[in-house]
Image 1 (spheres, rainbow, N blue to C red):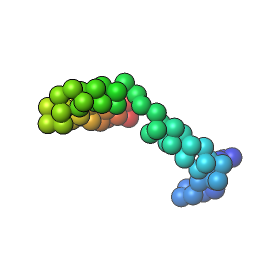
Image 2: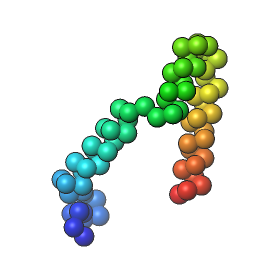
Image 3: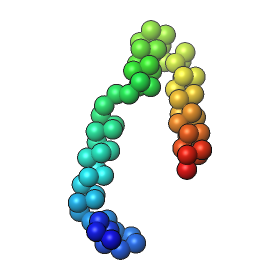
Image 4: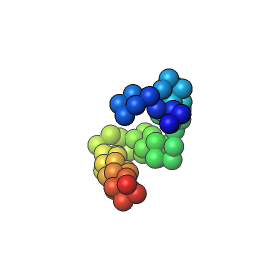
Length: 67
């Protein structure tokens, strides 16, 4: 393959593109992050924890279903 050295190593170009993708995805807020920010500011941390846990379990469930 073009991007992979062997079964255990990534090529530098694939690693850089993966790293940049992860950097952008973690630094830009999505709808869940905005909802948690607003809920935390309005209701406080303790009342926002169920929302945070629900989002975490929902994302994990989606990943399990999708593969």
